[in-house]
Amino acid sequence: MRVLLVVADFPALSETFVLDQITGLMDRGFAVDILAARGRDEATIHREIVSYRLLDRVYYVAWTKRKSAGLVGWIGPLLDLARQGRLQLLKEIVAAGLRRRLKRPLVVGALQLLAYAEAVEDLPPPDVVLCHFGPNGDLMVRVRKALGARWPVATFFHGYDISNLLAKMGPRIYDRLLRDGDLFLPASGFFRMRLAELGAAADRTSVQRMGVRPESEWRGEQPTPGGKKREFVFISVGRLVEKKGHEYTVRALARCRQRAPDIDMKLRIVGGGPLMDKLQDMIADLGLEGSVQLSGSLPREDIKGRLLSADAFVLPSVTAENGDMEGFPVAILEAMAAGLPVLTTRHGGIPEIVDDGVTGLLAAERDVDGLADAMYRIARDRSLADRLGRAAREKVERDLDLDRWNDKLAARIRQLASSGSMVEPRRELRRRLVTG
Image (cartoon, rainbow, N blue to C red; front, side):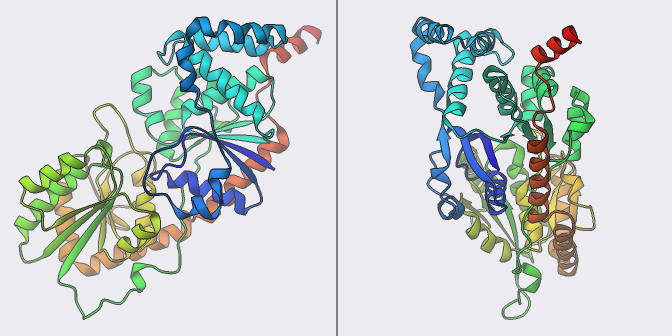
């Protein structure tokens, strides 16, 4: 069975959930092709990219390079389509150019649709198309109609596509997708409710968790060398962007150190991004140069080692000023799988996986005092940290195991492929209504 997986960027170091799905489907016997707009220029890549030879499976559309032709330069290709009798594709290309919901220039939407349609025709025919993030799902239902194809389209919703993009573009941005898409897979129950409010059909919407693999090695089984540790190490993993809330972690650590100078608290932040300089300045201003380490981006095997050597995980996610929200942070799951207690916020779908006082401690968004209280409490009480960390590990084993969620995804794909698209093309529906 052949799956076409559509993403904006590949490979993307921070999108391990995409990587885990691809390799999981390949392990289950699926042939996976990857359609991406671009590759990220990142110095670090995950080892699965090499071991599974995924760069041999990716097709880059690179449609933006064709924009320089302008409208006049596209008269020829449009006339060629007309001469070939490809009127449905021509019609959809023109409609895509006129469709201004994404507020793009006239030619951009048309070029994008044509480029993606050409790319899909160059690839082996898929049985199912999987799209990560709503805009890709919207694009592929239009490509399907333009080509007169019948493959089902399933769309994963993660965060920005169901938060700040809606705030920016308006609630009707997904009208076509929610009408014509076959399956909608939000990462959390919180976003499932948002999709329902937008009009997603309940029988076509299911939560698909981004699980992790609870490997045999975890912190709960690691002996502490030399007896009781003197320092308490917090770790945070996530891109250095506003919604990850790293600045609140740094400020909370400063207050904790003032409150409990007898505890040697350390903070290690793993991740790269646009806020690196701002965080470095904040660390210097607060006099935390010896206590906070910014590690930059690391491959996941190195991150695992950092998690196993830490005492607690902290990620105080917030809704960014532009409305951007977290979906279902995989970094939290990886910390739980490593046996770490999680200190985080009541944000998005996070309370669905972190139970306050059971697997971690929750604070309100942007509440530095509340976060500092949680950090102080867990650094003071190692038995509490161990109890919460063990419960976190057990929750991953019980509810968030990657292999079980990949099994569920594989079953959903097979069901979709066996039935074909559940959304009948409107022209065929009109024909049946007229003929009876």
